[in-house]
Image (cartoon, rainbow, N blue to C red; front, side, top):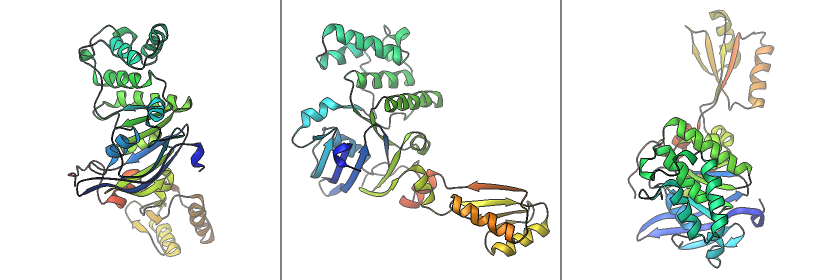
Length: 317
């Protein structure tokens, strides 16, 4: 990828707090107009990475460019190009939804007429118009998250950092947030997402990186990562035990179930592996009644790479 055309380009990013190494020389590159997900357990360094990339804290080393600007020498230009929605809502409970957005427009020095138009657009876009005059303290969790993201969008940022944006939301609110992210990316916005929800990364991310103990231990598309760990297989269903016996002899490997007449043959789920299975069946003159492909999910990937699932709570080192 051409780093000059990247929305985010990071090389050798390092950060320590005392003797605790949080980020140990990580490299990241995110194409403009895509969603990039950074996965990792609690304490892995995800939030620290977001805080550095959004200019909230300084790194100890490394080179960073955001939206074409050098973070070290052009921090103000970086801030003008980005938006941040953190783990904890920035909504002021003592203000109404509309007042929260107006306050953000004023802080960004939008002219009065333009700011009010922008506020009205965002209230409509996030389906908050009917609740605009109500105190934010009365909002549900999903409404607060939508308002929080709307506040991030007042300045029309080109790059948005979403730090675990759906934590604590019910399934419906989470899906609403997912659709909002898709719409933003369709409009050319770049999303940098940190999450512990594997389904979220699978649904949204064009590319995924797994961060563990301050290092990137894997990166690729969701499909690439799933194929990188063992556990994939093709499940063959036969009509009777005789056919199962014949298939077991033909493959010489796999896990059989004599009661269900099934044989699981190891495979990565790819077209080539599937073709090998079909050719071997045909060569042995065996007709499988059913065939299904099973691949590891992202939780399997995460466990294989880090030794635990993302639901585990890791004590900060």
